[in-house]
Length: 79
Image (tube, rainbow, N blue to C red; front, side, top):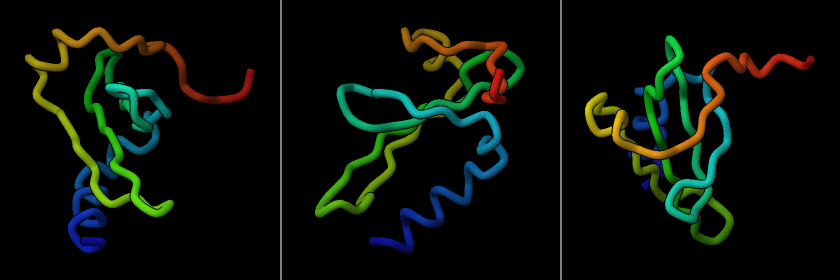
């Protein structure tokens, strides 16, 4: 439920400044980059216009094998 989703989101709050929207396995998601490396990938399950679940991955070995483009030097700040 909502409490589980909120708790999971809070666990990743330190990555929030580097989070960027991404398409993950064909669904809405986000990636976070830390020190130029992919630090987390999240995919969102949306039901009735609300996030019902967040599927996340932060295992460095598995992330290293993923082919998700991420601009390592992008700070997200406007040009």
